[in-house]
Image (cartoon, rainbow, N blue to C red; front, side, top):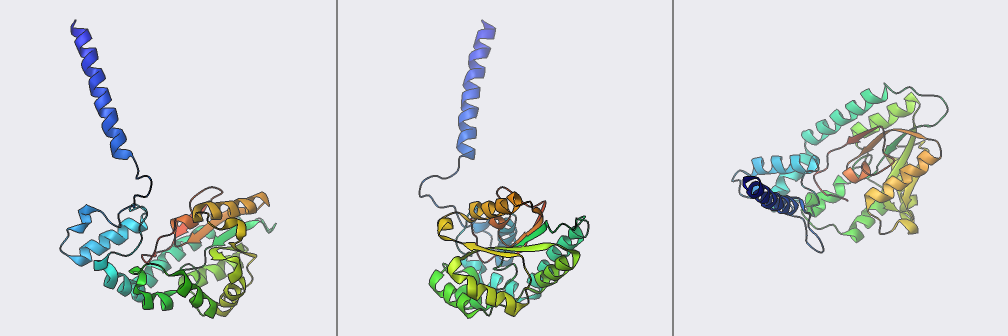
Amino acid sequence: MDSGRFAVAFLLLSLATSSLSERLIRLPRGDQRAPAYSDVLRYRNNDDSFCESWKFSIEANDAGVWYVVPDRCGKFVTEYMNGERYRLDSEVIGEYALVYAKTVNISGDGKDAWIFDIDETLLSNLPYYVNHGCGSEIFDEKSFDEWVDFAEAPALPASFRLYTELQQLGFKIFLLTGRSEFQRECTDKNLQYAGFTNYEKLFLRGDSDLGKLATLYKSEKRQELKDEGYRIHGSSGDQWSDLFGFATASRSFKLPNPMYYIS
């Protein structure tokens, strides 16, 4: 009798625990939008403390999908992107990537590859974003495309050094961007202007890629390279969607970018 009461109690406890666990881990569905930041951060009085924690959470990809920089962090992000800290953070990532690259045994068969994203990885669109709130405004595709047409985005110095040294080490460089095929000419022009030359191939979104999430689109392009026999040793990007998915690189390096999020 006692064992029977224990079994019933255990069953009820299991059902309650199961229900609670499911409720805790379930992700938003339908048209629910993920919060830009958590309630835990929202009530901090000190803006610098709030924004440092917010920036850490998005760089670690813990915040999930977010749409704009929080209102109270607009100045913080603008100062970060225009200041020494952004440059130093980028240099640290570039150094780690280069140290790793020097450990790779280059085969000499021309199949040792490294993939770079373009925007906020090789080219800096900061001249555009300083006029658009550095991420505190909803992205305007039309005005950004007009900026891209100018083909005047400067190189990120840390990435330029890494790009140059990888070529000297014998890596084949592939560029994989979310820009569209109609922007190929101005993109190539800008790359040449910024000093990024002699890359093996530039991937842009074609008609069949429109509407795909960046993670899927970039994974498919990496798979194409692997199917051609390339060994993707390294990948550099400012978005987790540049690096996640399938057919990933042996090592991936995430550059800082608190201005926007692409899934």
